[in-house]
Image (cartoon, rainbow, N blue to C red; front, side, top):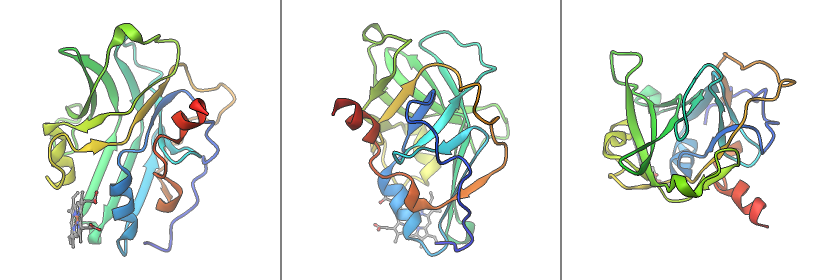
Length: 201
Ligand code: HEM
């Protein structure tokens, strides 16, 4: 792993901070961390949370109606001298054909606004109170999302559980950091559903 990793400036994100809390995939983070030059970088509204998942902040400019929820931020992984270059940017949650969808900006499209479906999950919106946090444990890689990981994972590969905490960022918090912050990979991605476990305890 790269020796010049900086400590993130926002490791103290409150566990109940509004936004999308998502660990992406533990084994992928472990894999990147195990490479000689593996790096993880966050920025633009994304930060690592103390429980080991990434927090994508709510998009304050978005005017989306439930069940759509828009979040901002980028988590980037690099390894193998740049041959591995994976970006997870601005995730949105929506419901399509009765199924939960997690989409992200399409990293390979010339259209900067183009999105692709990264993962899907079962979601019964009738059972969710949009004002309360809610979580999904069975998150699966969508067919379109396989390209982000160079087709190493097959469609329906299990990904990390996700937690949505409604609301806006705390007024007292620093403004969203637009800089990219390199973070130590062993500080994130462990215990992807730790927040849910804490709540259940
Ligand atoms: C020089 C190029 C590369 C080499 C030598 C390499 C090597 C490897 C090796 C040895 C593994 C198995 C790791 C293990 O099971 O412990 C692996 C897994 C993997 N590689 Fe690469 N890789 C390369 C490029 C890439 C690229 C460009 C991607 C694109 C995203 C990628 C994505 C993955 C993924 C997703 C896994 C599975 C990780 C998991 O266990 O969840 N690799 N790679």
